[in-house]
Image 1 (tube, rainbow, N blue to C red):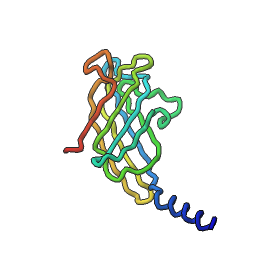
Image 2: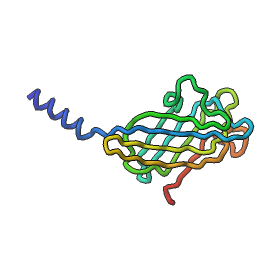
Image 3: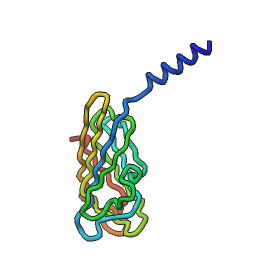
Image 4: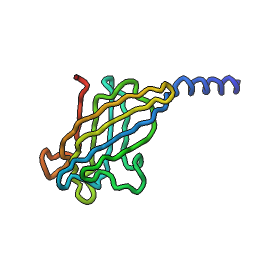
Length: 150
């Protein structure tokens, strides 16, 4: 009986397993005065049917010791997780508004998903071109780019 139960658990694990994917995220900070930030940045991307990848902090996905989100720079973040079933079309990018010069001007975010098992790739660039700051217009620390209806 114990063997049957163990086999059942193994089958359940295999059937609910997901294909692991590698994610590469390129974040480009604007090239204007005081564009950079030291704030914690989170990212969520989702598909048209609502499947999401949520990254609570991009810093652990970045280069160790690198100063991210500086004026005019593009920073690379890499990690892995559950594959999205289709190309993402919606993004939420958020700053916690803390640190030295918390305001941040974001040009764009490029997202790539690589599914190694199938040797397939999904890419999406989200054009932001916006300031994330409480003390300057539009006065928010987040931006949603929703291209799902396009």
